[in-house]
Length: 270
Image (cartoon, rainbow, N blue to C red):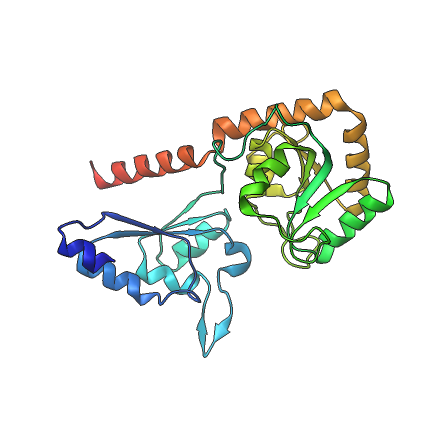
């Protein structure tokens, strides 16, 4: 693609990727930089558990092997910034965000779901959904392993907007106390529905807990919070409205990238 565009006299100044060493040969970025002078940025959403990745034939295949071959990493794990710097890499903290043109309230549609969840069925996710159902809560769960099956990507914003509560699970894999930011941490509040998720410390820098989103500490506490929120229409909708306002103000992709491009322009002296 680069060679074809270059033959037509057009070469991009900036290449933004979201990849790992297991998906692309890291050295290809160095070749692009050397041949075309392109500035390479990689978005790393899973550094907390995929920085190293897996060792295959003596080589790591996470984001780590990309470091010598790219110019900047945008990482969603604050502590990972120092990891890159220790390897002479450049990184910025860059949490995920949402698109308000995709995720937004749909007032013409009634909220028919008490609580919804989108994601694979395993670990604490299954424990939470089962506990909610035993408590008499109607849970609409979609994803691999659930009776509802997978849901089309274009239907997720509708599901969120039609849910009184959107359930988040911030843990990684089968762990109960190892957290990472998720896209739904931004898409759910942006949808205008009340968002309830794991008490992930990362969220405290992004939302006012209890006012803009709700959190739970364990399975039993999640059930308690859901039952409380379903009974409190005013309180639940207050959280939903405040969460939407905060997401619109601080957590759009436009805002994230506008800030990034402004910083790059300053660094470039332009």
